[in-house]
Length: 285
Image (tube, rainbow, N blue to C red; front, top):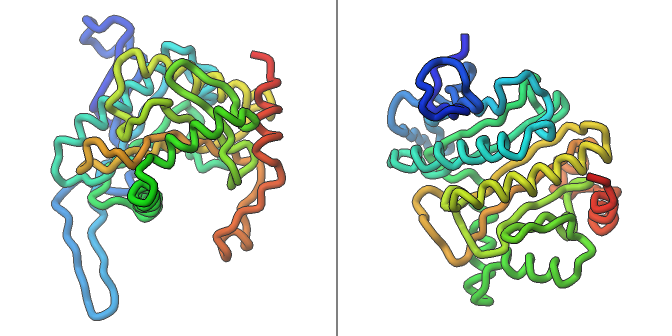
């Protein structure tokens, strides 16, 4: 049985029945974290540990049995992205949560445990290490240069053009310089914004359009590749910041991460981002 929903979108908003839903958000039946207490931290002379506190939810992206997010319509994808926004806004009201992570695993190789199109959301009582390192790096650049490093990156990529895949009025998608993975793609708002959930209603339709276009390009180029994506947004305690810029990172699983990468922290990417962007631009939509 599917757990009781915490959010539902319906084709007819006045329909309060069980049918007619377009997107549902439910608690994960096998959560990585459990929302049952406050954060408890334990220490001894050497180690520190804490209880597995948090919220773990599943966003069911369609009532139809689809395995591939690229098959969702623009309107359906907008409903998914809006569900992310609404859950993030709701969870921000709980003082225990310091960071909200939205991510998607599509395909067995990317870690998906069941095929129906879905993504996941986790609310955490701490800011995770990877997010903290990225935020701290952005702050150091801002303190030194007085500018957001992501805004600088967007301007440089648009001026150069070789790594750009596609643009909308408010968003840009490109293969980042020194990409870690083949065909890795980032989507960012052109105007500075630190929080994913702070966009206008129209913004999520535009985001759905550029995300769908990007996924279709990858889909047609590689015949439904497995992929992960992650939304990087500001911590819950920071409502707006001048130095951090929210963004989405899409990572196709086209090569294996192995011992060299795990042991060194370096990545071997056999496809230059300039070539990857050019080949994705050439895909017919």
